Length: 398
Image (tube, rainbow, N blue to C red):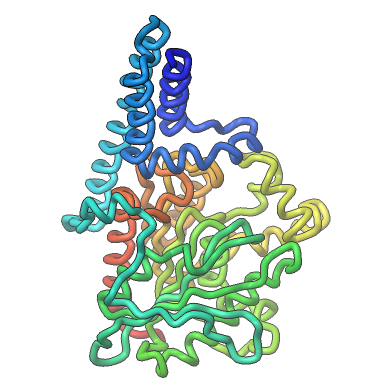
């Protein structure tokens, strides 16, 4: 029992350290243990409760009969400082977001919502799944308020993440979607072809085709086709940003070149913005993304397809046609280095500073907005308020 308590304390302390100092090298190992930092950082009280329960059970079983057990108990108590630090970081995130918005940021995060972080049921939101896009096998989920508001409402199109090879539209972006729909918005979470079956640029073509479809369908949903916002996370953030910045690239709209794929606002969650820098080995990116794009997505090396890698990078398309954009990234992101988001935000700010808002969330890992955690809830609330503010402006083309 004493040895077991020592091991529990050691593991708890290692996890607490990893949450605040995540492993970054080697890249493959960092990606493998990313989930530990993700879960421990966004659900610190759940992690602490699990370890404390295990420790209490061992203590009752006689683990303190030997000195090693007391050492384990001390380690367990020391590990408790980690969740406290995570909780304080979430408070700082709220203060930072409120300052960026210029208004107080209050979020109704009840104890029960925090206790069950994946419970997304909302009586005010109606989801209609598996909407078939005309002439395609790809589907989408439609979200509408149970009590429709008067007049056409803004429309959110959401692109899920998953490294261009997987992902689930029903589980990503749901906090943002439901937060907006509760206030009258209409939202649609789209599907796109995934690698290795799909080869670039299939992915961006599907996103653009979905945008054109959503604009056509908007009136029948009670949405305004002139007020469309685009959002996505991780690989979805890459695709959403690229689609928002390239409304005039006809090659990515084969057969629907004349369809309007412009959007009025963009929110990108920990997106990828410069694929050349990501795969050429000169930055903080690990080799996983280089192999991913070479073997599964682009299926060509950077040396053989430099122009295509550059064209697939949102950083190559930012210009006067860019819609207002909100870029959100965690300061401790293991999978998508925060330095890459800072570089893109700096590029945008040097070109059109009034078009881009960059929010770096203290202590946040990749995918931090998936849970109903304090930090995730604050970031979603900030994004929803920013979108509501932007979409209250004049319609595109008016």
